Image 1: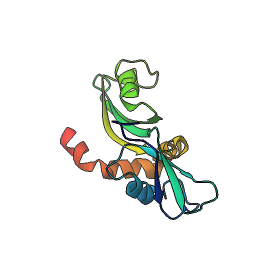
Image 2: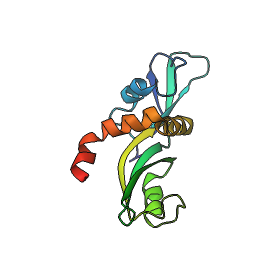
Image 3: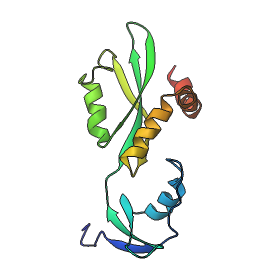
Amino acid sequence: MICGISTTAVCNLPPPKAQRAFGRTRQNAKLLAGKPAYICEVVAGKQDTFIIKEGTMYYTYVLLCRDFIRNRSEFYIGSSEDLKNRVQEHRLGEVKTTKSFDEITLVYYEACLDKTDARKRELQLKTGFGRGYLKRRLESYLTVRD
């Protein structure tokens, strides 16, 4: 229950189609408009009815890591269930990969309803195409910072 309101509700939507990892974005946006994070499950025996339950969000995030001594900056891409805590771990030097950097800034994140989707998006952003996408997406931020 959230604020005395039951977190289980029934909505009539067409059943989701088998799509690529992020093909469900529009459906999720319609489903979650103005509501806390929820996960859909099909009601047994009814193809067009879903039960919406409160759920957890999973995040794919991008950190801009800067080392002033060596004059270098890199993107670090990861995924986590608790974004605030994970970014704090990076900043405190508790993560081996980013502990050598002087400044760590969260510059981009995406939220997913499924852990697998967040992990797939992380792997996609780590490819050459994904890094190019990030550079284009963050172009104005990066030009202001430099």
